[in-house]
Image 1: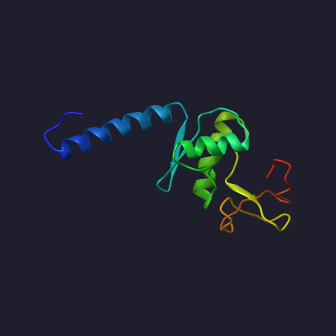
Image 2: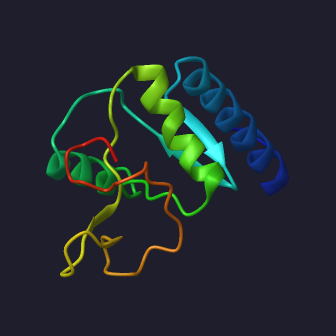
Image 3: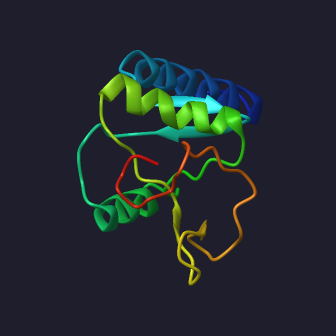
Length: 121
């Protein structure tokens, strides 16, 4: 990056980031909600591999905290015609779920009679 000052370098970086985000959006690899970026590599994997890949990328498995974030995750489910892992797990109380760090869920949008643990939640 060439520039006369920090402002020039920052503008160049912002431009490069914008171009990269545009390419990823065209390929349906990222979407955004509430200032958060949701991304996929489009590959199928088990939960542990998904968790590892998210951590390697500096992120975490998505756990929707509001309808907008739920829609961001649903965008990938629909565009890739697949399921998505969520960053939640069943608590010690059967039928109750929590975030991976043990925090209580503040938002849910389950189908009727869900979660059942059968993958249709």
